[in-house]
Every structure is written in C-alpha cells, then in structure tokens.
Amino acid sequence: MRLGINVLLGLVLAATVGAHFGLSADPTLPNREFLPNMVRSIPADAFAPSAVLPGGQTLQAPPPGTIPRGLLPLHYAATPEDAIRAGLELTNPFAPDDQKAINRGTVVFGNYCAACHGPGGLGDGLVTRRGVPPPPSLLVDNALKIADGQMFHIVTYGQKNMSSYASQVSREDRWKAILYVRLLQRQATARVAAPAPPSAPASAPQPR
Ligand code: HEC
Image (cartoon, rainbow, N blue to C red; front, side):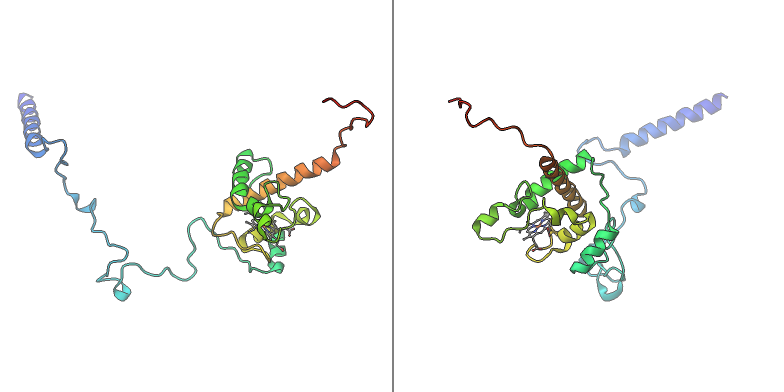
C-alpha cells in the first residue's frame, strides 16, 4: 500500500518537474507539441507545382458534371419558351407572408431593380429620365400574369432590353425581390378595388 502511494507521488513529481522544463515560461511562445505530425500536415499550395498530381500542378480541373455546393444547376436556356417553362416548373421557395424575406426583397429591389423599374415598380426609374427606354409597369396586367418562376427566369436570364441579373443578385435574393414585386402588385390591386375617398364639394369654402 505504502509502496503504491510512493510510486504515485514519484510519478506526480516526475510529471511536475517534466512540465517545469517542458513547458515554456514565456507566455508569448507556444508550448512544446507532442507528436505534432498529424496535426500539421504539409499543405500544398493550390497554384504551386506538384510532384505527384497529373499535369504537374496542384489545382486540378473538377470532373465533368461537378456542381458548386448548394447551387443546383438550372436547366433553362435564355429563351422566351424556357421562361414560360420555368413559370410552370419553378415556385418561390419563400412564402408570400415571410416578413423577413419581404424585408430583404425590399432592399434588393431598391438596390438592383428600382433604378429602372422605379421604387414602386411603375417603370419610372431614375435612368428613364436620361433616355433609357422605360420598362413596362410591374403593376399592370402583363406583369400580374407572369408566374413566379417566369419572373425568376427573366431576372436570371434577362428579357429583351433587360439584361441578366444572375451575377449581381443571388438566387435567394432574386426570389425575395419577386416577393416584393408581388407585394407591390397586391397593394396596387387593393388601391384599385377600394372606393375612392369622397371629394369635398366644389362649392364648399376652401380653408386658406
Ligand atoms: C437596366 C434597367 C433594368 C433593371 C436594373 C431591371 N430591369 Fe427588369 N426590365 C427592364 C426592361 C427594359 C424590361 C422590359 C423588357 C422587355 O422589353 O421585355 C424589364 C422587364 C422586367 C420584367 C417583365 C415585365 C413584363 O411585363 O414583361 C420583370 C418581371 C422585371 N423586369 C423584373 C426586374 C427585377 C425583379 C429586377 C431587379 C432584380 C429588374 N427587373 C431589374 C429593365 C430593367
């Protein structure tokens, strides 16, 4: 029993003395590492030559058919026919009452669409005052009939005078901007449906 305790105390002493010499006293320096080989592998620089990989280069072309993580391919061409097909096949992943998505869509529309389409979607954006042909209103019949997926196709691939916004606006943001366009449309439709406020009779004395 006593021998056991002594051996244990001896081990504790050896560990303490070992730690005293093994660990750095200077807190700005790293401590000694024990078997660091697997933690620190030898990294290959993406653009450095390689002695083992095909073509003598480290960075290899991705195999055909590789897709970026989180970005499923869209199988559409930039044609009006495929815009219609997108309208039948794609649906907005965000719900029309998703307030967070609408808020983001409002920002996206203000940043990327309003310059041409106008802040309210009427087609009276700032650039139209400087000779750019005005886009059609997004609040009238034609745009009301465009399905969400078709609108997504228009923003993604462009349509006539409007170029593609795929490189500037992420997919999620395009869907959210469409949510905002739908909100503008609902508001416009509600305005038309609501009765006009009664106007003051012409003969009434006008306040000055
Ligand atoms: C550089 C100006 C410009 C910008 C920016 C722009 N558009 Fe357009 N957009 C147009 C023009 C011009 C048209 C009409 C194209 C045509 O003749 O079919 C159009 C058409 C559309 C249509 C189809 C309307 C219809 O009745 O056919 C939709 C939907 C649309 N844009 C949405 C957007 C959204 C959403 C954004 C922002 C991500 C955006 N646009 C950004 C110029 C622009």
